[in-house]
Image (cartoon, rainbow, N blue to C red; front, top):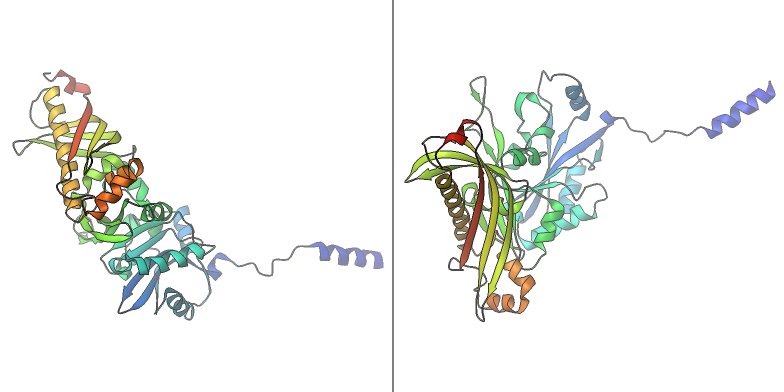
Length: 379
């Protein structure tokens, strides 16, 4: 008997303990972080979700909205604001599930951004791959907007912007790591998507339902905020942003709609034409187009020409609207800096790096494809 007791005692010492184990419901999970700067004080907002409720939603059809908690802390520094938030926290806080960071316009200044970088980069839990946004809206409202069908907020544009962009491209979403890379790059202009609450497009049971959308972008060059442009003025950037761009354009002739073309797989190149005291640029764009609808009988060659003209107008509009605020969304100056840094530095000193009079040539080629009955149209 003694031998049995001794054996059991020895085995109990070999068992691993779970004294510090925490259940899901015992931890507060932060999913989004927002930062504002007002009256010389930093304001931190956090979005907190109940993962136990979300797990139930994933396993069955949701019957009620997932609860969303929004926390707020203030301080003269971000650290003080964070401490203020911790003082009222009821349980342990986990930052390992933060997938979005939202900054107000007042934070997009070098001094404030340096604190944001220092806070998030030094954290061992917050990832570099979180999505980054700017906003002009109230942070509390942004963090409480829920998606369709009472789904978890994790399925909203705030946390999952990529799926929406792949289906129909407007302004390309950006991750924190890519933002820092462009932010610190000389001559580069980074476009920070602007998050906005819209109540115009969707309703639930005849009641307007607020939903998140990207309504424009903040343009930052050489660590300086150049300004903000609305979405329609930044559409030209999507054709140079990624080969995964998919979007439709309405082709018009003399102000009348001729048809709609779905464009995809854009491939572009930028050529810098250097001169002793100036530089001009040539952008070559090749894109595949598929006819979606036709409102007026027209030949393929004419439809191709009108589609290319539509793209050129869209890209010229973006270039000129950005140039008015000395921004460069096509990163033309970055190409000049990499090919001829001396000329780039000279133009910067003369304040001629980029402006509305900078020569820009666009060569657009659309590989237009017809299908089905559309093939019978006159060529």
